[in-house]
Length: 353
Image (cartoon, rainbow, N blue to C red; front, top):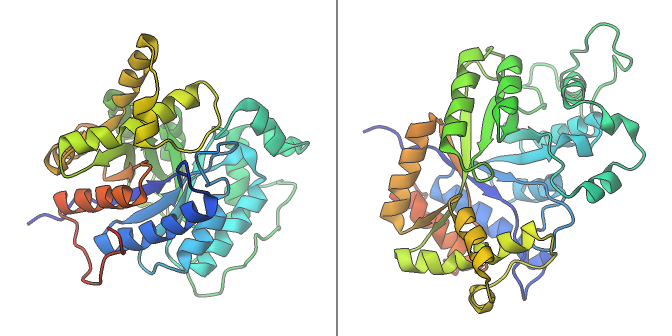
């Protein structure tokens, strides 16, 4: 019997209406423990700013907490939006995380700001180095993280702390380039990193497949990645019945509408979404957004996920499930894990599942 398709979790740390960030973070800790029990491979946390509906503005802080409640899961940023940060600071942050969870940390890197332009400017302040081209920032990050500086680098010799111990694996984590187009695929292939394609942002399966094909064709093996390795991230809502899954996904509809209008509000409940008076134009917008989301019962979700992996050539799928009810969110992941044949541990599930 072949091994099941590796599945991972991308957590945006939603803050449901009627709740708050502390409760959302406690739920993330519970979900990570449950994901580990269910047999998921990775647990990544995304970076977003100036959004009342999400509480993951600093993924490294969340990952540090997760490192203390898990023992097997690979933990990572999905990702660090590099233009918002000084490369040396990123190198030190993720080396330190690797010291907390040796051999379990991934560093996903993106070039989008993860927020609106005005907030991005506020994040970067007057630090002109953060306005450098992404390729330069990436090269500097790798130099600080590995100590392999190119000739003539003005900061050659600076060591990102904490330092490696002689004879032990490096604390600098494996790099994954995030992409929703062909750009990230080209950079990942050139540097010999992993590739994570955001199909939940760019719903075109053809674009994802093309990016992964180009990545594999041009891939240059590296010490960390002797072979090309690709992840496709997708949005999923799974429930015991297709009707219940559709009902739960109503929250996503209103959240998306608020997002495109620039409204700041907590993640809406199903009741709030059902009560909202959608105009015909808004309903069309929501219907288009739903094409990005795999919604259904376990059999339908399984079929669509396997088809996505087959059509894109992905080695692994990363699932993001945004629901107002934390128990329904945990149940969605559990149903998908069972449907795709992940091997769960025998210890008890998280209470309330």
